Figure 1 (spheres, rainbow, N blue to C red):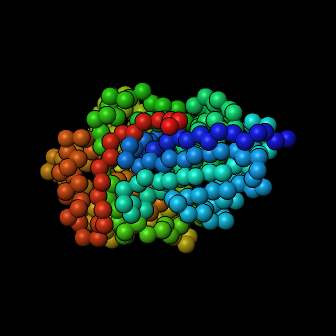
Figure 2 (cartoon, rainbow, N blue to C red):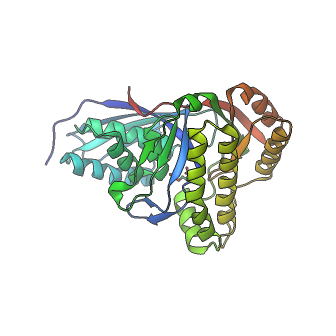
Length: 330
Ligand code: PMV
């Protein structure tokens, strides 16, 4: 079972930041989330990936940011490519070239844009024409957050009852998404993360006495966030965003042993965001599996927010991102 060498296919996808977080799996093997999540896709964080199935290759090959991918990354990607090969009924190995175009030393996770771009490029190169829902499922099997990066603007991940029902959909809210900005403050020069999100979620689910409380608050937060987007109500969306991130980190911090992603600068940034709000500037903070702080605001306030965050000692870079578009073929 082989196919002739395919033409190279190049796809572009943007990373996303969760406003209601994905934190916990109900099935690790199939990468099924324990709950839904909701995100904003970001224009400034882009991955561009080229895939070619090549009959002359004995093994899959992968170049990441100009260098050969590590054995661990290649092994994971190869297992994921088997899902594409199974769907396309081919056995040909693939050559992948992928490059992240992120703000300098951002230290931000690129797995969302990475697996979204890869799902689109690899499925097309294998001769498949998948609908967004099926692309989202394929991306999820690589990285949970990648399921959301198939779409531009606001996206909603559904936990689903089965693997076929765990995919993301776009949320109608493009005019609102065009008005908002995410200001990204990088803490600690983009050093590699201390705990990989995959392992950290599992450890949190197993050991944190607050994990059940975290999961219990997600459905209400999702409803409130969707209602806020439907009303284009930024303060309501911002409040849910900040509260949800703090609930996720509270559960992580209570893990035994603890998972603490924050550094002193992270907390200084959170205090600055509160101070901005007290001065009437719309700004709400969210943090993921790292010390960086992303601040949801409106376009008209983004420069003021960025200036305030730049002044905090320990911040190594600040960038402003608008809402990004869906994963596309280049
Ligand atoms: O998609 P993963 O396995 O990298 O997990 C993402 C986890 C968070 O970034 C912390 C939350 C989220 O929903 O993106």
